[in-house]
Image (tube, rainbow, N blue to C red; front, side):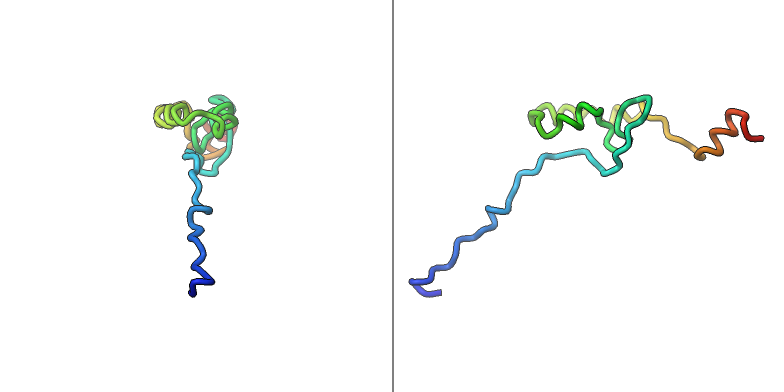
Length: 90
């Protein structure tokens, strides 16, 4: 480029954003008894407040999430197995 037509400034900084770290895995189903998302293990309140929480509060939740896994019982065998266990299917 010439002196009259200087090189435009880099615009990479314009597009750079500091995204909020999230445990969301896009499996958004609330467990009816535990009241936790089965995908990310956050409570509905935590999900609703996530973008407004202080970084320290989000970090504390992230540390706590692995310990919540036991709160959600995994289904084994689907509906048929459930009904069989309950004696409704022979």
